[in-house]
Length: 134
Image (cartoon, rainbow, N blue to C red; front, side, top):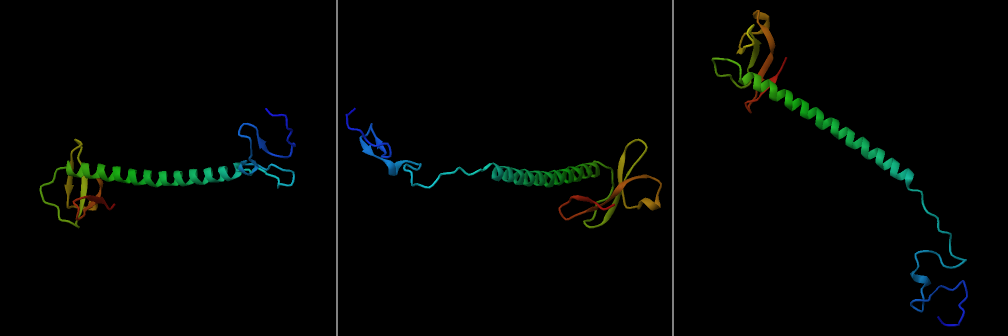
């Protein structure tokens, strides 16, 4: 350490023996503007709330689509496992019934015209997927 005294307001790095005020990330003299930290908590909270709302909304949409897909799968599984002795025509309506012995069958006869317990009416689309219509 040398004996020369450097004034307090001068920024001097003793280790490098250089003046480095321009390299500092903060103000180094009395005339410099005041550095204030910005409050980012409010911004972060707003952003988090927006993100949470967006994610929650998207989750609800995906869950609704999933539930609809599962229901469609269950109906198709039920129909394809049912008994019928004809080849269904695409676009026509058919009716699914259940007998007392839990046997399901597909029929052309509407529920108003018979006494069987109806599970619903369905239409076969061009992708060979049954869609519930009633």
